[in-house]
Length: 414
Length: 184
Picture 1 (cartoon, chains in turn cyan, orange):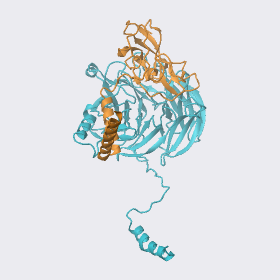
Picture 2: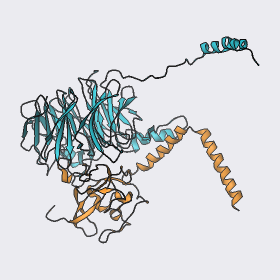
Picture 3: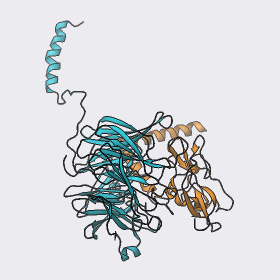
Picture 4: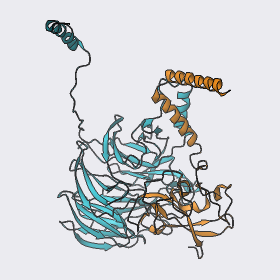
C-alpha cells in the first residue's frame, strides 16, 4: 500500500508537468456562439422538412445557425431597423392534431434566439409557396399575415407593441404585399388589387379596390412578385412584366414590358419556378429564372437566369445555371480522399454538366457586387454566381435537407 | 447442406464488409451511395419508375394499368394533369379514396383532363386527404390549367385541408366529377 507522501510526489512530479505541457488546454463548458452584425451576404434558406430557416454566410461558405418554425410552409420577415426576425407559425398541441395555435414568433438576429410570440387567429394560409403570404409594413410597425379558410383576410400584428390588433377581411382577395408605411394590398381573382390602409393603432382606416391591371384568365401574373424600392414587379405566365408603383396616394400601374422577344417566344423561353424572380433595388436589376417549355410550365425548374435593366426594359445577360449541389440527410455528396479515380472527375462532370440545373428558387444579395443565389428543392445546397458577370463561383453545402425559399434581406452591415 | 454454404457466405460477407470498412470512411461511403442515388434518380428525374408498393386500381373506360396514363401510381396518369402533391394511391388509398385514418377535405380545386381512352375532357376534383403528417411518397406536380392562389378554385398550390378542423396535409386524390362541357 502506498503512503500519502507517494501520491503527493506523483501529483507534483507527473500530473502537474503533464497538465502544463499538454497541447490541448482545458476548455470552458456552456459557451454559445453569438452572431456578428447581419451582412448583405447572409442568405436565409427555408427548409420544409426540418421546419426551419438556415442562416448561411455565402461569402465565407459558413453555416451560421437556424431560425425555427412550426408546422407547414412559412415565410420569415426581416426587420432592418430592429435586430429581429418575424416568423408566422402554426402549431398543433399534439403535433398533427389537437388544438391549433398560430403565432407570430420573434427571433433575435444577434443570437437567433427566441424572444417572444404574439398569438393570432388560427387561420394562417399554409399554401405550397409561402412567398407574399405575410408582409412587414414599410415603417416596420405592423405585420400582415394572409389567412385562408376558403374565406380570406389579413391578421394585423403590432410587432413594436407585441400585440395582435385586428383581422381585416379581404373579400375574395389573397396575399399580402407591403405598399407604404401603413398600407398593404392583396390580389383579387378579377386582376384588381385590394388596398388596405391602417391607422396608427393598426386598425383599418381605409379600403379600396383598384381597376383590374392584368387578365387572370388569359395571362395571369404569378403571385411571386418582387419589390425594388417603391415598385413591385409582377410577371405573367407569358413573361409580361406589370410594374406597380406604391409610392403615391394611389397604386400606379406602370407600362408593361416583356421578358421575352419574338425569337425567345419561338424558342419557347418562359419564366417559371417556385421563386422565379429576384431584384436588386439600387442597381435597378430584375432577375428571372427561365426555361424552355410550353403552356402550363410556369412552375418548372429553370436552366438560365436572365438579367434585365428595369429602367431600359432591356436584357443585359443570360446566366446558364448548374445543379446547385447534392445532399442526402444533411451530407454533401462530394469527393473525399476515399473516392478513387475516375469517380471524383466523373462526379464533378455530372454536377457541372450532366445533371440538369433543376433550379426552382433564386435570390440576389443587395450589396454593390451582388451574388446570385440558386437552389433546387431536392437538396440542401446553394449555387453562388457573380450576379454581374454570371460567373459560377461555388456551391455552399450542406445547409439542410431540402431548400424552399431564399432571402438576402440586408443591404449593408446593420 | 446448408451449414457449410451459409458459413462460407457469412465469412465472405464479413470479410467483404471488413475490407470495405477499412478502405472507406462512413461519411465517404454515404456520400458515394448518395451520389449513386442522385445520379440514378436524376436521369430522368421525373417521372420516376412506378411505385411497386402502390395500390393500382383499374377503372373501366381508362387506359390499362400497364400504360403510364392508366396507372394511378404514376405522375403521368391522365387524371393527374393539374395535381400538386403526394399520390394517395402510393399512400394506402387509391386515386378516389383516402388512406386509412385520414379525413378527406370536402373543399377542393378542380382540373380539366383529357382521358386518352375516349378522348373526352373530364372535370377532376383533387380532394386532399388530411389529419396525418405528409405521406411523402410519389410526389407529382403537373400544372395544366393551374392558376395562382388568388384564383383559388384553379390553384393547386393551396392547402385544401379545410372544412374538417385540421389543416395537416397527407396526400391528394383525383376523382372524376363528370364530363367537362362548355369549356369548363
